[in-house]
Amino acid sequence: MSEMLNVDPKSSKDFNPYKEIGTKWMLVTSGTDKKFNTMTASWGGVGVLWNKDVSFIFIRPQRYTFEFLENCDFYSLSFFDEKYKPALAKCGQVSGRDTDKIKETGLNPVFDDNSVYFKEAKKVLICKKIYSQFITPDCFIDESLQKNYEKNDYHKMYIGEIVKYIEEG
Ligand SMILES: Cc1cc2nc3c(=O)[nH]c(=O)nc-3n(C[C@H](O)[C@H](O)[C@H](O)COP(=O)(O)O)c2cc1C
Image (cartoon, rainbow, N blue to C red; front, side, top):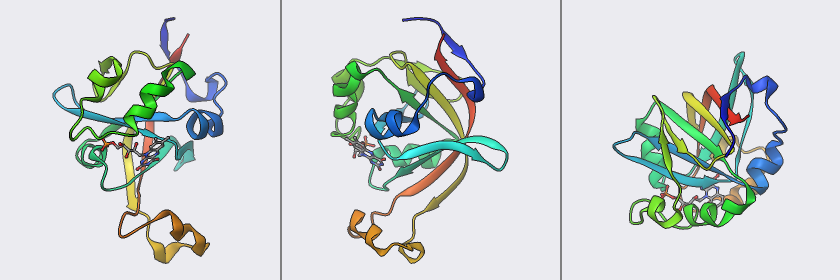
């Protein structure tokens, strides 16, 4: 693997969020070297808000990862080559509550000052939580959005300031 560099998001190479997040997926990881969890996500984005470079993710409260996101100040987003798609599929099928995803996938966690990400990733965004809010059905302008939800499983949106942007050099 080539060297990983910490870069300014504005000078990042070819990052198409529709493809990277929507088609190729990402791992959302939160926790510490003592305890962390990771899950696959294909909803979310990157952009600019409050004069900050940010990412935003949408996590249902029943996910084990949700507990880590609630209790930690940081999360990471890891992006991979297509060959890791089976590993990402696994991390989106099973829960860290009852399965050791690291053992199952063979991915190698990297413990940063503030977060946990994966050695195999080709791009990693380390994000500091700055805002979170549950999706509320009262705010749906397009009522058909309700079809994405059963019971009370509305996503919580987390907005994180990108404090480190690491990519292959
Ligand atoms: C392709 C794919 C995309 C997913 N995207 C999301 C998402 O954006 N938000 C979410 O809450 N769950 C999403 N999931 C579901 C979680 O990844 C899945 O429920 C996972 O098992 C949760 O693991 P955990 O309980 O260890 O946190 C996705 C699953 C897959 C396979």
